[in-house]
Amino acid sequence: MAKFARLLMCTLTLAFAGLAHAQEARPSESAATSTKPVVVFAAASLKNALDTIGKDWESKTGNKVALSFAASSALAKQLDSGAPADLFVSADLKWMDWVAERKLIDPASRKTLLGNTLVLIAPKESTFSLKIEKGFKLAEALGDGRLAMGEPKSVPAGIYGQAALTSLGVWEAVSAKVAGAENVRVALAYVARGEAPLGIVYGTDAKSDPQVKVIDTFPADSHPPIVYPVAIAASSTSAEARKFLEFLSGPDAAKVFEGQGFTVLK
Image 1 (cartoon, helix red, strand yellow):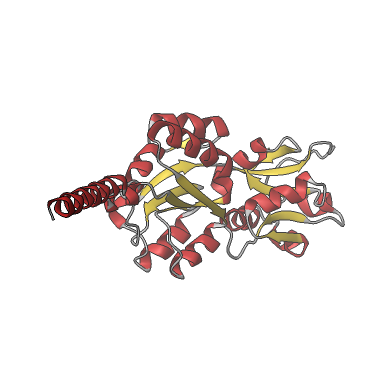
Image 2 (cartoon, helix red, strand yellow):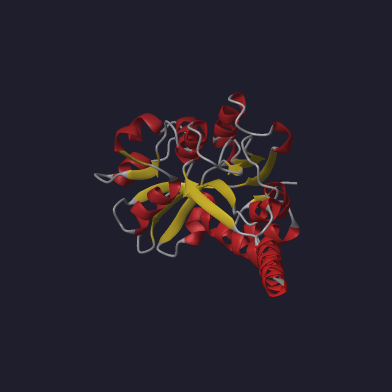
C-alpha cells in the first residue's frame, strides 16, 4: 500500500511539473498578439521606400510588418469591405477623406506624411524633347502612341495627371490617347517596357526605374498638391501600429523617403 502511494505521488508530481512547463512554454495572449505583423495598406508609389523602411523596422524592433501595395482607391475600397489593416497610406487626400467619412480610420492618428512631384517620362532610349507649358504639343508628340497614366477617374496619379493636363489646356486633345492603368506603377511599367512612348508618373517612380527618363516636370501650380496622408485603421487592434506610424514619421524613415525623392512634410 505504501509502495502504491509513493508511486501515485510520483506520478502526480510529474504531471503537475509537465503542466507547469507547458504553461510556461505557451506564449501569453498579449505576447502572441504582439508577434502579429503590422498590416499596412499603402499607395503603390511607396513600394520601394516602404520595403526598405519595413526591413529597417523589423531589424530594429524584431516586430514584423506586412505591406500591401495598390492604388489608393483600391485599398480604400478594400478597407470599406472589411479587409483587415492597421495603417492606411494614401497618395491623395480624396481617398483618405473617403475612408474618414465612413469612420474607417482613427481621425486622431491622421497626419500628412509626404509630398511628391508629377513628371512626364519616356523610355530611356527615347529622343523625345518636350517642354511642359500651356498648350504644349503632347498629342502631336504621341502620334499613334498612347499616354500611360493612372486611371484618371480613380487612381490618384491619374487624377493629378488629368488636372495638370486640363490646367495646361491639352486634356481634350490627349484624352482619347490615354492608357489608364490600375495604379501608377503599372503606368510606369508600360513606359519602361516601351509599350507607351510617354507616361505621367510621380517623380519618385521615375527615379526608381532606370528604364525610363524624365522629359519634364509638371508645374506645381498645374495640379493639386501631391500629398500622402497616413492614419491608423479604426478596426486595428495592433499594439505596434502606433509605434510603426511613429517610426514612419521619424528620422530613419525620413532619410529613406528623401533618398527616394519624396518631400518629408513636418
